[in-house]
Image (cartoon, rainbow, N blue to C red):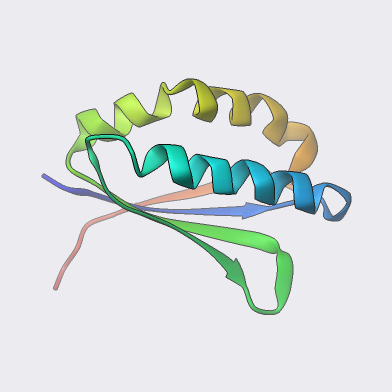
Length: 96
């Protein structure tokens, strides 16, 4: 069963460029994962420090494997000082 996920991240303004570079690297690497169906990064129009990922994974096992990738683990280590708050992760079911 596919897994749909939205992640909302808010960069500390002084770390915005560094966070954006890391997020773009995550996009490139994530799209190469076998279980990745879609992995898109967006920036909120009226807040250049807020980023939103929209992701679709083949199944929960694929998402679990993604979350264990070295680049995801490394981002988690720096997120505390580079983000304004903990990322908001929304797991969703597609209704239509």
